[in-house]
Length: 468
Image 1 (cartoon, rainbow, N blue to C red):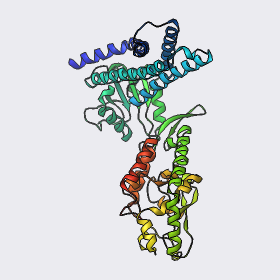
Image 2: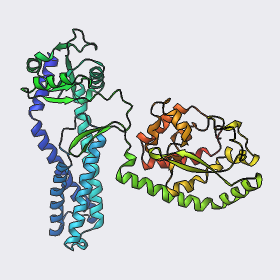
Image 3: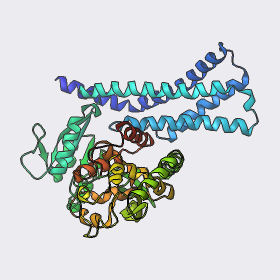
Image 4: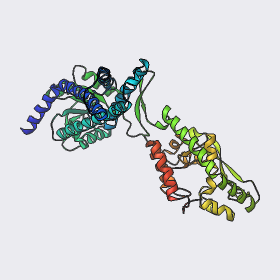
């Protein structure tokens, strides 16, 4: 009886979803207007706005509400991350004030307004809109977890994909998506408390009888005929139909859905480091920092070059072919630490400690000073300061067949230091662990992550027991 009451309340909320949307818009307009007034009071200690400020306040509210709508601020956020909602709000508020500033310059009226007021309005409106939306999200999540404002879901398919979908929805009760059953030919359900309610032939009737709001198609790619049959069976129903692509078996990296030439495309493996602005920021970071570092360490490099030359006959630099971004090879520079004939018997993986190393070479290896010339590689564009460590071509050809996901690390430029190195996975350590760290770095890349790794590289020091 109590469950039926919750369902009725959930249906009531659903019937008033349009009113909730209008209230949402009203709250955003109120926030924009109130923060504009509050910012004015903080700047001038009174609320007596002249006509110029009143016009800008009104224009800002109109533009802000419009941009929030354009950027998708009033779409259904159920099940989506709060980060995406924050991006929407920030884009709308910053866009609003950018348009206000541009219009002020275009009309040559910028001197009439306080810059402090504009900046305070921008910051406070963003903060308050995000704040109330967070409170609203958590409140709705708490209600949904208790069984209110739920959406009833049927899942077509009870295989591994269908079970994965059901478990995900069960584990996130705040989304308010209640799985009422599986549509399957089987008689027994693979998950306790979620029954098999019928077959595809009965789905139209089941949707009506069980008051279903959404039907999720979770069938493997091999069952295209069943997918088409499901869509045909639901053609006369007014429910929301979702299809879960069968990608759980793939080794995914920054997977997402995008649009190319008007076609929906699922990215199974990509890096947001390669996107326009991120690629530009990464390039600026590398060029700027490598230039500054080379300038600072040039006396050290000259001293090390002299040390290498005096310690043994041969060139100062050791050039070794390595593989970097997109599988391209380049000559990685190091200060030579070995005798010139140390690799006469061929190249072996994991044999760094057994090679013929000079006394001075042993010192610069242990302290990682032999790696300093790689800042020249960064300046030339062959490498990044932070990224997966590059490997020799002969070993890449071997490991790509032995280690899952190995070639995915070549989606970005190789680095002097990386997440694997600051976690101790360097030299002749477990290669699988290093690849895990490299893929984690690519998945979670940001400028701040790069700076953190650079800081940890210096904080933990260049000397390490696995350095070779």
